[in-house]
Amino acid sequence: METKTSREVLECLNGIFQAEMGGIVRYLHYSFMIMGHNRIPIQKWFRDQATESMGHAILIGEKITSLGGHPPVVASKVEETNIHGVNQILTESLKFEEETLAMYKNLVRLAGDDIAIDELAREMVRRETEHTEEVKKMLRSV
Image 1 (cartoon, rainbow, N blue to C red):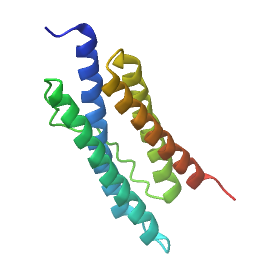
Image 2 (spheres, rainbow, N blue to C red; image 1 turned 135 degrees about the vertical axis):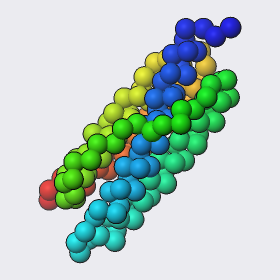
Image 3 (cartoon, rainbow, N blue to C red; image 1 turned 90 degrees about the horizontal axis):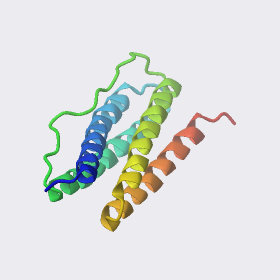
């Protein structure tokens, strides 16, 4: 029988899965919209982020099915501001990364005695923290 905690874990994992799927869409879109003389390295960085989001979605989707759940077939909503300057896109990226980080931190809280979920969540908190730090550095003026 499913406990309240396991339901909460599955709900959290489903939300994370949707966010990571949304990250794929978000970062691919950003990679298409980058223009200017710095396009190539920035475009590559966004494509790498999309690939990483896909890896995260696969990891989370496998965990959902391992726990008897069913990964959602929809991604989280990705807002389109139609403002595609690098600073604007990076600011939007930072917001997305911080929201996703909060979801992984919530998963840490929900993990309880499940060491596998706890370690998965903590590793993802570390990775997402590194992402937010990197984007903050990219936004910083010298």
